[in-house]
Image (cartoon, rainbow, N blue to C red; front, side, top):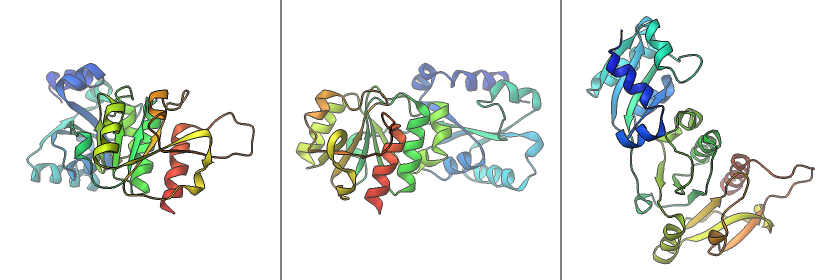
Amino acid sequence: MLELSIIKHLNKLKQKKFRKEEKEFVVEGIKGVMDALNSEMEVILVIVDGKLRDEKEFEKIILKAENKNVQVAFCGRNDIDKIKNTETFPGCLAVIDQLEILADQLEDGPIICLDAIKDPGNLGTIIRTADWFGFKNILLSEDTVDVYNPKTVRSTMGSIFHLKIAKTSNLLKTLEKLKKESEYKIYSLDLKGESHKKMKPEAKAIYIFGSESQGIRPDLEKIVDKMYTISGSGNAESLNVAVSAAIVMANLSS
């Protein structure tokens, strides 16, 4: 049975304000917890369903946590309903210190930049897709949804632990600095641009994807070096931002 203080702490971490104050977040599930334990992030606590502790996959997590001197606690059935983030508890979760990365701490190589993305599922899907296609860097605008939102973390399927993800307090200034000092080229999508199939992979490139409803903001458009478009043949008004990002990343990786 979990201590009441742990249950209260976990429930507070469901709130953005508290996650920001404590600089912690939660990941659920075998893959997510193991990815966290194998990452450079600091895992503070691992919680496992007591009835599953002897199953092979959960034994691996417990052993890995203990080898890293991470506290392991076991929960009972009465605890699960109080701490779970989803309808069905996946058997384990971990509390993790947030890793704060600045734009100039990103790795060498292209950057996927997200401007005012509001849907946590879209953000998580883009992070997962970037990981699939080998992109290592994500840059988030100041008004993009919290990357540590439980739905975002869940949607990344563990990819949040594989990439460098930086959030800036002023995206325009950050991009201007990267363009001036690091000689990055900036590209984005627009209905009137050239075909996205003409995009070529570049090490010093930033690819901006805008909000689901508005696209990128006008002040960012002014510093974009070239606009591209994803041509369609049907009647849909637009593409979901996660789908657009996936198409571009797939093209750049082919």
